[in-house]
Length: 446
Image (cartoon, rainbow, N blue to C red):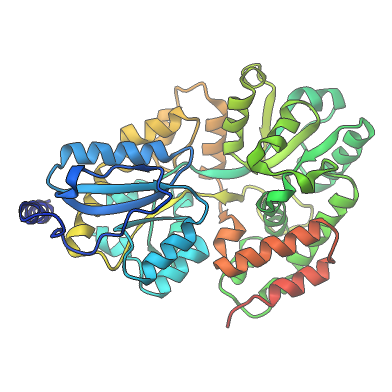
């Protein structure tokens, strides 16, 4: 750690010369900032970071607070802001050379764009000598979205969020059905629920993105990871894979069978209405990111404490090539080191990631919020826990042969937006499966 100490000593010396001499331009404070860890006077600011406000942002703030308390000569200026507009803001800042040392992201197609433009650093290279634990502490499944062509370009900073089914045990018990293990059983369950005047599945169609897991899981169960890999690589006619057409067809089969609550197209997930349909018994189940469990626990604590909220994974599709143990969702949000940062800023950022991100305290904070971070020590920390859902989340991710990043994040921003629109039309029966395939195939970049 000799080099680190020398760098930090150099930063401290520069700080004594006055503000603005810490190396590299610092971005202006975003207008919609909701929280910040900016040291008084910023005279000791040595690096900067942006993050998005979420259920996990308390950990970002706490980590920077601990760092700043321990390193008065090398402070980190953290800005935490709303999700809305963040991607445009960071894209503009990167293009203008005014991005912070650490940028917050989701990985996938957006990260690949940054890598191809030379805007973020390879952490595989930066951490190899002094900070191997920055990468080695994570589960392999958590690093897929953080990697581009074999190199790691981001450090996971939040909980893993695989998509799972959450269901009302009382409703399912009254219907006399068990969680379906195959697609045929799922369609049979739809018929049983409708006969009892219960909506089989809640869905927040107005938000559009909650429809993505249905497509992703059906593509995976039909065709396996190779289909996603071809799409993300923009291979010619990748969207014309038979697995995609079959997945689109199954989605419309489900819609026509009244698989969803009747007004799903008018429901926003952010309103909490989709979750409420499950815990009030108006819908039997919902397919959603795992953080929906904590959302329901917060909105209906007595329902969850009584043991009425069950969970299961997406079923097998008979005859499909995909492994039923594969999952989709968000492996984690990331912090990436920007290429425009000075050597001193990068060194401070690396030491901060090494010391504070996903250390014991950080991990325990996430677990305390019913989250499951994608690090190897989590299994040990959950061993004595009575949180069965967190153990379930850890097990399905740890055992997953493949963890597919949410499709709108895995693709480029333009393709992700096109997918949300085309898929919405598919759910609304405004387009055919064949038209959906053609529409998405037209988004492939040469």
